[in-house]
Image (tube, rainbow, N blue to C red; front, side):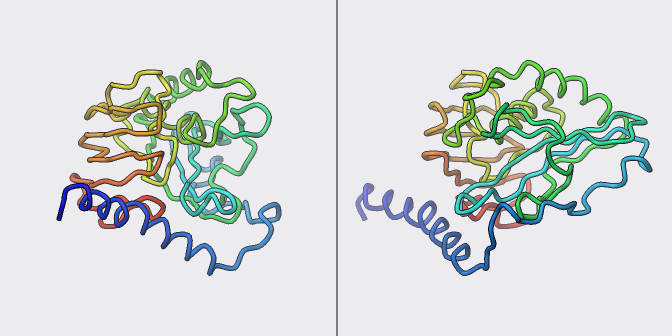
Length: 244
């Protein structure tokens, strides 16, 4: 088989087929009006009043409407030691891009149950909170109009920037977090957010990531496919992680 034909077949199987599968599942699911969709707690956090330790969480959930076929929305939740309430930070297209406590900390994202991408408690979380706050305070895309759903900066770009500022998180956003590879630091070559590898990225449109935490990822027009070597699995556009 000629190399060009093989590359085209691989692109169809690895990128287009998973998107088609996700689209089919979306069409077959019953859906209501997104404006009245469930945004209540998914029960993923303990009561802040009864949990004296510091907390850091990164959540991600399928985004609103048809965009959920291919993309997820990520956000950050923190709580200081002794704090009696969580703070949630989202980056959205509505009004001021950085929203604080607009939604329930571990709430469903318009009907979609979030998954925990990263969790830290106690002294480890307490150490992470100051750089998290500082990164949010100084985020370069914090003005109205800065948000762009594709290729970024979007909610996943925002969370990736925070995770890059705290590489001790040692976590990676899912392959479905379109926008995570947008160069928030305006560098097209640099370290991965976990600091365990390198990333080459052309404005969020095309990229290659090689890292111990992130694995091997190929980004084509925001869609990400790859392999997780540390915890054996494959990563597919629209579908996400398949494996351990």
